[in-house]
Length: 403
Image (cartoon, rainbow, N blue to C red; front, side):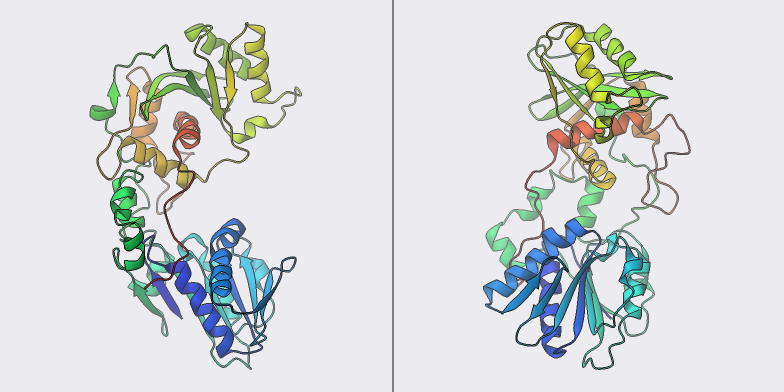
């Protein structure tokens, strides 16, 4: 069993795909499997990289999209493409080999299922291999590095080793310092194994740096972000000025409706001339038992109060919690020390979120059970920050050869 641990930009997906192609020729006529934690990751990164390598080297193949299977014409070997989020479906035919991308985001059970399928009696080279970015002292770290199983080997790549990447983007690593918080930068960009589990979620927050007196800029729209929770119904009001997020106000109502939250907002800001932009949970688009969605209720309320410029920036699906939290931490304080988020002192519940919301013990899951009043305001603000500040063309792995 082989592993390749490295930071972003170290050519992990490239290495995985080259190894997969090599094994199709070492095992002619046999079947192998390429997997990734989710289908979108498999489709958008791993498969795309494999197809680019095959096409650029003019290696002939046939691809059956419906079955998600590729057949190498020269060796007649098959490559099955499978996501790992439903690992019980991985039971079945014997395999000569398998390769997994971003293993640290997959369950250990998926690896064990595939390890049990390495039993093709006609295979000439039985092997399983994987690539990953470090994610703390998890099961991958234990299995490959700290307590390696017999027959397991790992290569640990370091930053700055991908010379091709640095020739194309010399400031690649420095550029990411403004996008990630310090701890996440050390893990993702420098490839370090850190204690990422447990502890505070918003670990870059410091009230001596982030809590200041703020006033609305009347020339800028108000950004209103909601978390549609009945108790408490929570929302924050902010503005973005020169790339900096300025949180001006919070609204926290016990046992309240969306319409009551609208009335509270209107009482605080009235007919705001520069307009209002609405953010929030994608589930707010779902119809309630009354027949209207939360966002439709907001539309109806402001339509009834008169002409108020209203815009909605709500995703069709919520971002991954991990991605949203990392972006929030980077805006609070990036790895380069830049602060791009300030909070008014009146936002007492939001400040409590920043100082108290924690991960479950020995877990990467945010603890929402310890105090039911927590997480709602930081979640609401996170939806706003994600829509306004996420990178539409993220810096990361590139489909070029690692020299």
